[in-house]
Image (cartoon, rainbow, N blue to C red):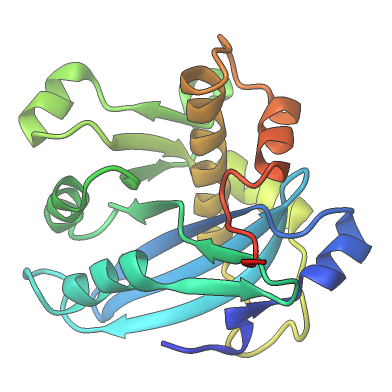
Length: 222
């Protein structure tokens, strides 16, 4: 599963945004032909860099097949910065608009770090996301299912999208994939602020300072 961006251009990221890639997220869009997997890195402030675009072909309405390949990709994929930093995927957001039952089962059995996202044009209060109700989560048998304000996040993605290299070909990102990765980033940031920094709300500055300390990547061995 090699790609030209297995080596991340951190020197360019630093020159452009003031920081290397600090966090890596993956989104998955499901259709009748398989899974479209988009991985992005984020430098300080949430500037996005395309890292990988993978099409896993195969019917998603059965267990095995593309789902096994997706599991292996999430667990095994590594990216290397041109400064020696090593990255793994921190969070995966899988769109559950199609083949929802299989998405829920995959996320449930994969464990922490995998989330199922039902997209909506809007959510009450203009929130980015809202977890399923306790009764819905109990019925599904796992907690990582949420409603996503895709309309809001696609607008944000369109305004923020940063390309590295060509805007056409393999690494041209779809707006929905980028929007889901932004949701994944916000979800992870809120979790780390509350559970690891002891904050009551999401604090983006605190999250990015934590990320700069190397929480989500490994430095090159001396």
